[in-house]
Structure formats: structure tokens, C-alpha cells
Image 1 (tube, helix red, strand yellow):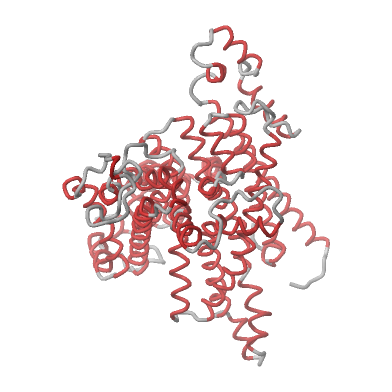
Image 2: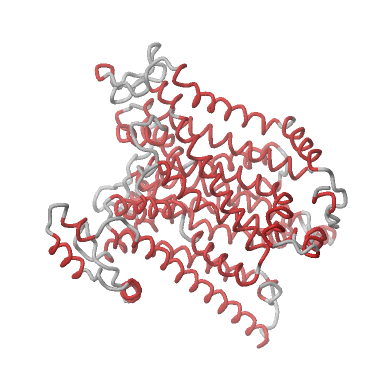
Length: 329
Length: 295
């Protein structure tokens, strides 16, 4: 981990970062193009959709023109992207208001829910994986591994329903809806968010614990660990200094890539618990064919996901000497 | 003489005839408790899907308002829902749609993904770069969101669900096939085919494809688990299987609003049914993976 910062190494690192940034940018452009194209193939004209089947043809055409829908596709796309970059995400058909405030508020709510889920799942899953690895092939390892994987494969609404029944309806420990009373403090909000976060936590636990476990096992069986043990270091020191540091590297990547899953899971969980987050927003927009809202929501989700992957890669580069020194990539 | 016998790859010094390998895999599977227990659960649900209509005590679609929301009893083992329909009959017959839609979607994903994976892995270079970037962009959109977007534009129907899930899972299969093909194409039998001046299509589909069947099979069984997950989820949010089907996800979505009233039987059994199928498919996938790795 230690070493001198020579100019050559700085160049290697910056080249890596620039390359990753460029790659993310390409992904985002492609993503926005896909989202835009899908928005185009939606059936029927928007003017007809808004004015209903009995409006006369001229009115529909006029509305389409005023919405700018009669222009060439490339112009519309450029206009959409340019607006997006300036923070103008278009006007919602459903609410007849700018999309942006809705997106910002929903994203904030979703981040709250995601934060609660992450704060609970990351330490417990890493702990679970480490405990499983230290008890490799013993009953406790099997319970954590098989239990974790089983929870991972179950759809969120299935675990959600069972959790609601057990903790909300039968035991009455937790509120079954995420809608906290107005003006509730931070702790009350967290109290309301625990049950909605649980299905996400259960899915994520298996993934993260599995990565932490396999990373740990690999590190425990490695030569450097044997050397450290033979050197006469205390077991505790070996684990903390040598094993954990190397074992948790892949786990960081998994945590970041799971953000994408998390957002998909949010659609379901937010619908189930009636929580006004970005998932429910996109879902409602899809149901109501509110195209600007839908497209903006999906693009924002794509951006969040791309950023998370980027951060994961950069973190890995910072921690992993093989990448930092230009061995890989 | 099959391609497998000609192959002289260093990583596989012993080339067995293909029917021998198949027998070996089947024997391993038949001894795997994990695989067999998963297989038994799936078999049970397939029987329910096929013959459920003749086995159930009530018509799963017949409502009986007077007996609505009756708790489980000897007359109605799993109780009745808000329209008085027998939950037990609905759960048994409810396996039908998901067991058609999810495998069909997986099959579509496997066919498209294998073709894409063969092309990108075989040609590499420009084709690979373009297709891989596109697939990365598709994979950058969370699956549920992608499905929402597509189904809004295609409309809700079983075919739309199959197409959407099939297309969104294809990149994952393509990625697996691509890396397998990249290893295969370095082997001598591919070079031999090139020397015989076989066409690219022939080399890809006749020479390489049979040798990358194992990774394709493993990846498809894993994807089948995800497909069931996806179909159930889409049905739950109202974009999948449509009423009046007794589908599990759909039943949960129509009944969970009353959960606070204590009508647990209207959702619990459907939830457990979905859980059993998803877990069973994953057990089978585990077994298949183990059997191929052992070889």
C-alpha cells in the first residue's frame, strides 16, 4: 500500500481515471439514446393522448407542435439532452408542471430508504461473510451461506409480504406503511423505513456476504497469510492487518454494482409500502403514460447507477495496487 | 468423428465422446440431493399447471360473494379472497401462466444471447466493441425499469413480457457465451476448420456451438430463476400477467391492500408458492452447475 508518488505513477492513475470517465460517458450517451428511442415508439400521438379521442385533428396537431413533437427526432433528442444538462427535465403531462422538483424530491426519499438499507446491510453482511469464512464448512458457514442465498433469490414483494405479516400485522412491532406522520423527526422516519428496507437488505445480504466470504477464504489460504502466521504474528493481527484488508476489496465493487439492483428493487418496495420515491414515481409515470416524467426518471436512475459503478472502479483503483500501478486495464 | 474428439486443447487432455459426457452429467445429477429436491418441487408445480383444473375442489375463477374472505377452514383449506374465490384452488392453478412465460422468456434470451455471444466472441474487434458497449448500456438500466419502459410501449400481454424479459436477459447470456467462445476459438479444431476453409457461420454454429453448450445450459438455468423472479415482480406491479388469471404475483397485488385487516390467507400462500418455485429453480441451477464443473 505504501510507496513513493513518482510522476510516472500519477500519470498511470490519471490515465486510468480518464479512461473510466470516458467509458462512463459513452455508456450514458448510449443509455440516453436508448431511453429516448423507447420513448418514441410509444403508441399514439401525445396530443391525442392528452386531449382524448374526441378532440379535433387541428387541436391535436397544434398541441403536438407546441410540445415540439413535430420536429426531427435528432433535434428533439438534442433538445432533450441540452435541457437535461441545464436542469430542465421537461413538463409532466400528468401534473402539468415541471418534472424536475418531483424527481429531486423522489430521489431524496429513495436515497433515504437506500441509506437505511445500506447502513444496516453492509456491516452485517460483511460480518456474516467473515464469520462464515472463519468457520469454513462448519454448520454456521452453511447456515449463513445457504440462508443468504435463499433470501437473495426471493422477489422483494414476496419477502416484503411475509415481513409485513409477521412484524406489522401479527407482532405489531413496526408500521406497515412507509408514510410517516408530517413533521416526524429523524428517528421516527427511520422507524418507518426499517420494514420497507428489510426486503432490500435480505436480497443484498446474500450477495455481499458471499463476496466477503469468498474473498476471506482466498486471503486465508494465501501465501502471505501463511507467511504472516509463520512469522509469529498474533492471529488477531494477521486477520486485521493482512486478511481483511485484501479480502474486502472485491466486496466494495459488489456493493457499488448492487446500486443498480437496489433501484430496481425500489420500484417494487416503494409500490408495496406506498413510499414516494423515485421507483414509485417512475412506476406511476409508466402507468399514466407520463412520458417526460418516465424518461427523466429513468435517465436519472441511469446516471446514479453509472456514477456508483464509476466510484466503485475508482475506489478499487485506489485500494488495489495492481490497478493503481497499471498492471491491469 | 465429432469435433470433441479432434480437439487437442491442453486444458482438456481427455476428450470423451459426447454421449458419454451427457451420461456422466446425468448420473451426477441423479445422485445430487440438491438437484433432485429442486426438480421434485418443479415437477409438482408443472403437474399442478397441467392437471390442476381437474384436481382442485373449486373453480379458481368462480366468485361466491356470500363466502368472501372466509378464513381457512375444512371447506376452504386456504380460505377465500374478497370475491369469495377459493384460495387453495387459485394457488394450485396459479402456477400455469408463470411456468409458461418464464421458461419461454429464458428460451428467447438463450437463443439471442448465444447468437450474440458467438458473434462477439468469434469476430472480436469492431463487432465485439460495438455490441458489447450496447449491451453494457442495456445492462446499466435496472431490469425492472427496462421492463417498465418496454412494456409501456409494447402494451401488457404475455408475449410482451416474454419479449421484454428475453431481450433484457440476453446480454447476460451473451457475456457468458462470449468468454467461453473466446477460449474455444484458440483451440486446434477451430484452426483445422479454418484450414478447411469453412465459413464463419459454419465454424461458429457447427464447430464451436456444441462445445459451449455446458456454459449455456448452466447460465440458462440460472436465468430461469431470475425470469421467474421478474415475471412474478412484473405481475405484482401490474405489468405482467393480467386478470382474471389466478397468477400468484397478480393475486398478491390485488389482495395486499387488505393486509392490515388481518386477511393474511389471501396473500401468504401465493407468496409461499412463488418462494418455493424460485428456490426450487435455484436448487436445480446449483445442481446443474455442480454436475458440469465435476466433469
